[in-house]
Length: 298
Length: 174
Image 1 (cartoon, chains in turn blue, purple):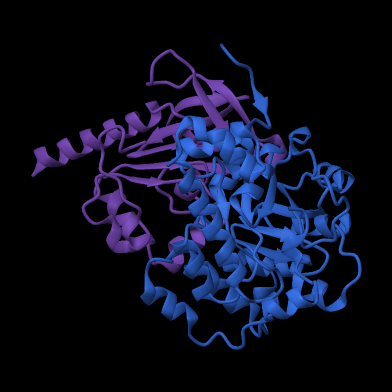
Image 2: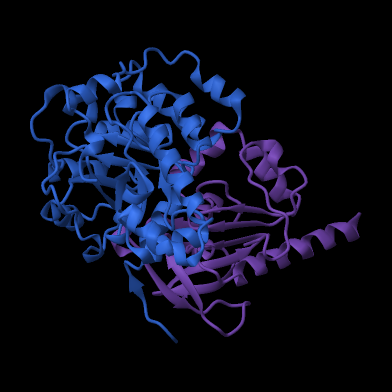
């Protein structure tokens, strides 16, 4: 026998994200919501203290979910349970690892704990997903050890415009790198403020070496289908479900639209009779009020 | 991987997608989610018809669970979900697999199941820690790990061989 049994290799860490491709990961704050999400066909749930729309409305410091709540959610469902930690808050991440969550989201939706540094994700056995607004940001997170990338979008707005921008930036940016000669990659790494070795990998493949999901602003089945057609390999949905009039139906509909994103008839059928979507927010007004979550932890 | 082995491959999302296929792969993912997807797309009768027509099915990880007797019942075996634990216990290991040569296969287990029980017609191709993790029987090949996550094509090649011989057999009967 050659190599022994190994845990937490890059392949094992990204492997779970690979298995979630084509699926929807839903934000939940209680075990009851987690059960609704699982029944609706979510491929995983994300435990957090408050959904982004409530964090926006109520303000204050948003932190990791109560460990008792995370445990309750783990007991309630059999699908993977992810949980959010604050940017740079490696002690929250240590707790989440001790709880054996399946993935940690180092998330800008929570109040950052470190304005300069992200968590050293290579030091953990549990894999991490991180948000990005651009290719450079995605590459920096990969350099730190992220095993999955999602667009940041603008969480809690029900407005998909930022997610579209971020997804296009990341997908097109990766494609552009393939056009460069080997001698140009160091310059590209400098522009993207990213490690050269990660730039090389992406330039070779024309895509990120880990699954790329969309997050931040999906509110309707059409939003979900749009993001998949733009190159997302799956969708995170936060406030969009449990802030809508009929969460259960909307959750099913967003799953259906994510699976059958290339089939307008099925997306149409899924979009009918869902009741009110979550109320949306205009991005320019948030920007004027300096309330954009996506600017945290670039 | 199947394309590299010379097969034409397509994604099956709706029942019509199974028309004209010689073999079906039920991939990894979450078995709960896949089961809901099979139900909402009305795929179950089409998968059954495919299997009853003698066309092979290959289930990996969640796909193995979906094939077991608690789900679609395509193979006389029962899988235990997440038997190896959560993501923190996920691992990769060298595995000797019957029928693919002596060289061990690097197998990636993600929140993996194992086979708790199987009938006499089911052949165990590989075990890990005393539990069957690759089985074959009644036109179904199933494994608890993810051959699709490595570059080793040998299990897919084994499935292709099953598919080819099933097609030849059907051709001879016709």
